[in-house]
Image 1 (cartoon, rainbow, N blue to C red):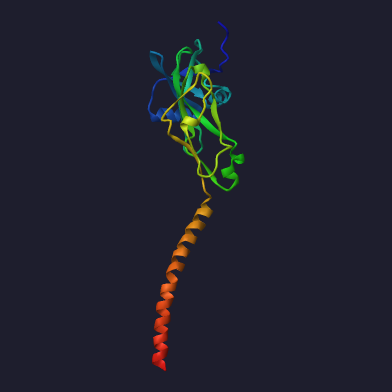
Image 2: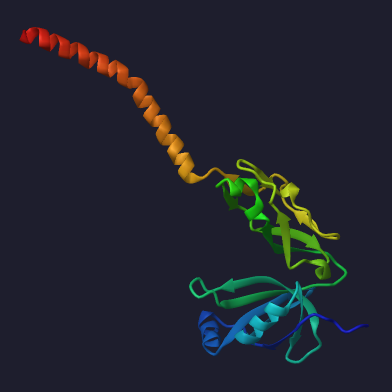
Length: 225
């Protein structure tokens, strides 16, 4: 069997502890984690934060996990919990996988060509509503990212999930009518149009007010005479 090209994640097993133990690990520069799935017992582990960052930066969808120097086995990142302020990873969940069985995963959707889109060039605002997609594929076929060209979108256009094309052997999961992105009119333009409409209504009412005022003024002038 050819050697795997997946980055190897070397971790150390640990005893499952509470939040106090997890905080102590983080102070020591370690990230607590757990691996589960594959019909095997979940195993808690710890890994130096720096090693984890490097492995994730170099990895595709699949990593080879080695626990306490044991034989590596393929896993995917199921969830990364990050600190709300500094963004550091505070916990990682890994899922054991088989390379011959499809799994569901979440991938980032990038929109390209926005600067060339007629709607954007005319001052419209591109709103990226859905930034992550759920896909189903063999672990080795999971893409790092999906891209979609929006260079043809005009003001008022709506991009839905059914328009997103996935690579071969990858299936997008979800409601085809899910809104992915829209191009809306410029907010300043919308506000200006609203003000114009309000002013038009006021102007339309003004003659009646002026006529009533003129009548009252005329009667007052006549009374003064």
